[in-house]
Image (cartoon, one colour):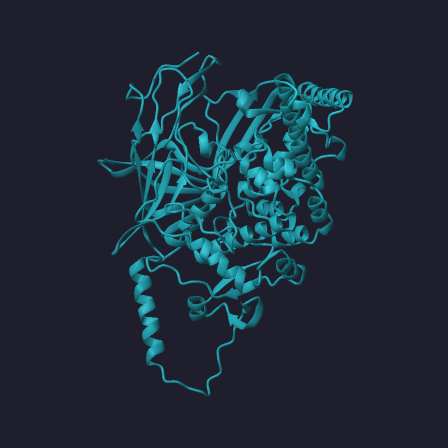
Length: 622
């Protein structure tokens, strides 16, 4: 066990001593500059502009050193000096490089294919190969997407029988109206529609049907260009094949995998394929900037993210909680500004320039000049967290309720000049969920996210979830490829874990005779693969975060809070899951444990109780 960072007073004293020594030393022209173990190319305006020494502290004050190597990971999964990295790091690297079969325990990776939405950022080599795939770009460019742009409704998955019946009915109506136009010697459908109200309705129905088939067909053609759908299934029928392929496409472009042709997906399909690959490169660069700078300010507490080189890299709603006005003390989008500066320095100004950069020998590390960090950034920062539960409905029985103000998690930095809201992210609170009784019966019970003060002391990286006895066995089993199997990824460690790749325990601090005790209240703040739940869902009482947000939060805490790394935390968990078979479960680690010293204070606000009942329901519902 080793204290990762010394006390702030010690750091200040050491820094002052270093400055005094340098200031008092006489200038000597005959003294050779010290040897450097790591000379790094400096990039300006898209070209190398000399080198900088990554070992010299003054260079770090003036330049940011970006890791562009295939062994880069988010800061949360990187190795600390003199410490071992989290055990999951090797799995992460395999997934990021597209070596999905080399990732043990990740049985869904091959089916998911694209993992950026879950926090696994592709390597620059993977992105470079996409940018170089000009045949795929031409395939997309040849698709006529006009019908997608004008579609009035959002197509959803249908059964094969339903989709076939829809298509047959539309084509039959087309033949019938064509026959009527020929028989009446009419020039077009408008002329037929003018003959009677009946024909006007038929023409409108035909046009709606043909527009639907054309839009679905155009989306399917794009999916076929990506190799996600066989060409023979480009037929205008929105069945499970199209839905699964569409979810993969959405994951490819960091969209919520809704399996629907929603507005975000249609807007993405309308963008040139090489431009989409370029945006993926900018998002990958952004996470490397985050890891190198220790920034977390993304604009989410204020007006939202700023465009990067004129481009919105994420859907506008994805990282912001619905129903919350910008905070007056919010930090601007410093990440976006720094990413734009890094892209300009490297010359990543568009798809072609970025393709040329990535087609060459990618330097494993580069120095760039970025905007200065805010003055309140320090090695140890005073941080506070508020979790607003938003609109809360305490109903006696489960029912759908409107939630205009969603739950939100806000991270503040406290400094002599006041308080800055660094981020405000969408999150979840509890609600009605299944619970298994001792008898084996499954009922619905309310899972509360209690209001009040807690602290974050224990941070787990690549955590495991130990399903409690009350978790129904059926929730731990899935049906895939014609058989039932254990949903092992949900227990982790995995990007598909119930906790994602980051988990923080909520501890209540209780004063006793022996001093302060930290009591685990059963609630966590954590990442989640259920990214759609951040917009409209609920949890079992925990506060979920988007996967990349959770990784950024963990990296920020490691960069700006004193902490102790305890390494992989051993545990002993055994269970036999009995649903459509018997599946033994064995978990030996809770993840890579980091203790924050001191803990970060968290205040869970009551929110707005909108129901007549003002206390959580306690009765189970069968």
